Length: 235
Length: 141
Image (cartoon, rainbow over all chains, first blue to last red; front, side, top):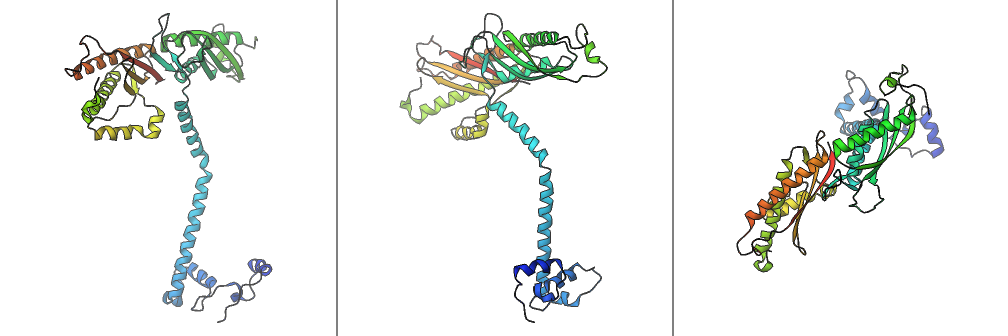
């Protein structure tokens, strides 16, 4: 059987959308005379339908095996694509790992440990550890969330081994019902206590920066947790 | 001071002493209540320095360097410098843990140096090489 050459490009589009007038025009033909299309259909046929030629012909068997392999590869590729679409979870995990790596790489400066006038000569703590502790202390207040916390020597000493009292700057977001001056005082009190009792550093000034107000519980239960229990923005 | 005149023997003895000081310092620090763990620097982890150093030291017969402790013998002025990085436990004041670690390490180092002192290399007998222990709290667990 003669094989036809490939049709010109313009015709190929038509051939794809409409049934070919001549099956041989767009069907590859195996040496045994069977077309690839016919082979595929035979292969797809229910198992009960016997195809004597298919069973006996080595060309058809080999070609069918390749078609099945192709089908597998395409299927696997589709599965991979679906999995990658779930990538956001992997990205979140990666982000968390990188945060930890960054923390490790940038623990901040080392700050002097020691309370009172006798600061230890050779005891130090990294800023990140202090910041974390102070943030947790602020968040022991009802309706308060702590953000960035920076700790640095009060005298502005830039060296890595500076001594003296430390100044703290902490950003917080709080339940909107918190009276702001009281909020700042409450945060300060918690931070001084944590610095003294959990770490053992000398803290000078504490800057509390209120960066956001949050919607608290509507029943005002948050208000009962703080001293005075005032409600409404008194600021 | 261990002279290089003894060639490989002198150098390996010096290395062994550093390894012993490091090992005993780590043991002492790790035993202090309030120490969660000794903390390697990330740089060491990334560079695989622990395993490479361990291989080198193991080849020389000494034990691998424990994480979190760096010991060095310096000259001019002669002294030992021990740097310890620790993670402390919540519930223990960081400064108290740091002080306890320093005390424990100072004791351990003094004992180790005494044990390793070989007759003939003693300089004037009564003079001890100063030991400076720096403790850095790298996190509170």
